[in-house]
Image (cartoon, rainbow, N blue to C red):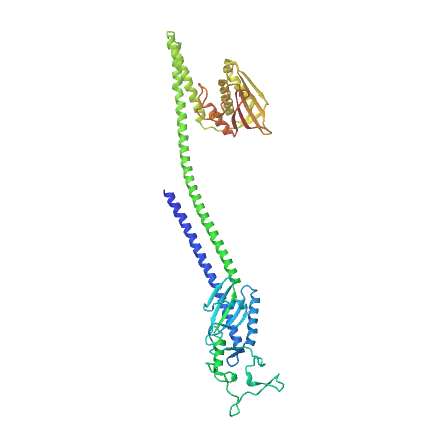
Length: 504
């Protein structure tokens, strides 16, 4: 339960840290977007300042002629579009009157035509519309001047838009050309004053061909009170997209890092638990070794009184006045004592620690010697035992190898019936290894028990201890060999030991 709570706390903290990073990246992205919008706004103010300066240069006594202003606006749109390579350039520009209607338009007139100038800033797909107020009548967004600027539409009387108007031009006698006339003068012969700087509904003297009502109507429609800019948002969108991908990559790798830290912590936790288990297992193993040594010592000490009991039973059976019944019971005592002694001997051999001392051992000769040792058992059951194969020498502990051969051969003699056959075969597996096989024609071992027979205290014989093959398996593993129980055709069993290293 404590481990689960710790896991929840750790993964909760990692998830919280990741969410903080997500929030931070979202905030940074919004900041970048706002900075990009501010850049577009600043660019629009720069364009407005440029247009303000141009308008002031073209203004004559509070008026700008449309024929002179339109080429300037078109050139301004063209220059900005080319400079920003159609990605964040100026798409359209328009000058607005008091009612918010376009007076002069340059660039994409469709954008200006469908714009809603009630909004100071309108973002759409691919472009942004920015409306800048004009204080007084200046196109400067800061409203630096208070001079009313009126855009005069093109003249149709041949004056070519000259601000002096009809008073300074008269047709010649042919009626087709215009000739310049001197400016009007007052009673003292001086040139008449131009009048007030802004209209205010009063017609300037040089526009005397209009009455006050016509001039007031012209001013209402052509007086500049605003500036609208349609700018492309290509660079803005590209910048936002790149930044969005950058933030997504950061969030992704932050999530991967948090997950990696969580998995690393979990693996570290598991490693620590495994180390604790290994320490406990090592302590348990040491305890089992001590118990094993104690059990082996107890078994060794138990054999002495058993030998004493056996000797006393034999002595009792040899007494001249012993009845046959007592002799029979003495024989039973001797047999049972021998059985227990054999089990104790097998247990001591299995439980005591072994150390392999490898020497050069003639495998065929060792097998023949063990066969001679078991001569009484072989002769009693009239068995045919053959030791053959190649005369090979292997690297092994001679005493342990002899014990393996003895256990396997005694197991075979117990398995076969009277008159049976046992074969010991030695052959070369490859250039460096040999194979030892012991075959018999007994009942064999069922397929489902061929692995269990190597376990301690598992036996198929009524007189077996169940430790003989377990000792064989233990010695084989100590040498790095492999042992297998296989069927012998047509009947019987084969015990094969492989990977025996050949001696030089």
